[in-house]
Length: 219
Image (cartoon, rainbow, N blue to C red; front, side):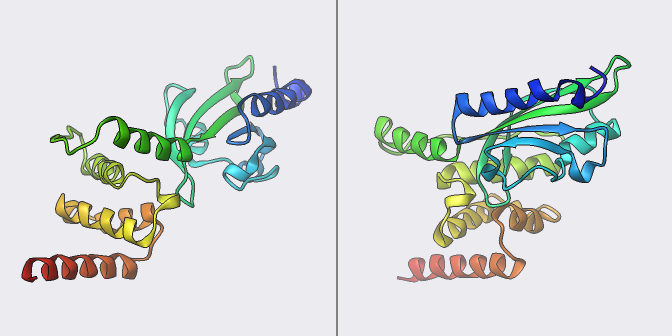
């Protein structure tokens, strides 16, 4: 196959078929990577998952791949997060021509947000009571360490960002503060981006949380 157009009929049927097989929570996207990257999507099913449509651009992952920053092309079963905080389990498969040049990709993004909430509910029913667990993250960079702290705090809150209330986000910020996340350079910026809040809101939640703890101690 020298171009996506060579097998466009089959590939678009594949997009439709995969989406039909796995239901409305599964987005399937076909990218043509031989043209402008800002309009690489040539077919998509269940675009409501990420809010994209035909004619929209690819993601940073595909851009990094085209730049040559990834040795292994295909990437399976990884977690991503949408702008509104929904958690996706994704796979990206790349197509090459005879010369070995990447010409397109087929990406599957399955929204597991509700499944994560259900899993947390089941865990509270199956394993009642407090359990003592110590987690230590062995990483090679402070960026990875911050990612680990964010994921651990989110697990403790028990909700994806998309369905968090103000109180949930405040609790997550308090947990991150207790773990020392704000001692990491630019930690606050990354946490703001992850929670989709402003710096003002972040510091407001921090102060509000500290005030609540102080009142509890004094009371």
